[in-house]
Image (cartoon, rainbow, N blue to C red; front, side, top):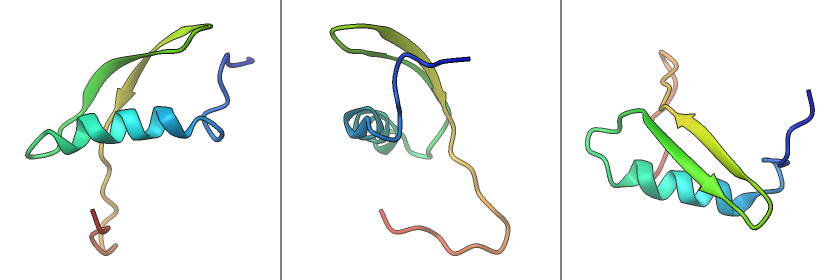
Length: 58
């Protein structure tokens, strides 16, 4: 299946989602909408933790 957006090249998308996650304490999953001139996407962003891994810097 072909996606309308290449998320690896869409840094603005990642920044938009991260800013929403940063506003939540504790960090919780969010459902959001991301829109460009060409398309609108719905997404689910959820933090994940891997047991034994170090806490990432903010």
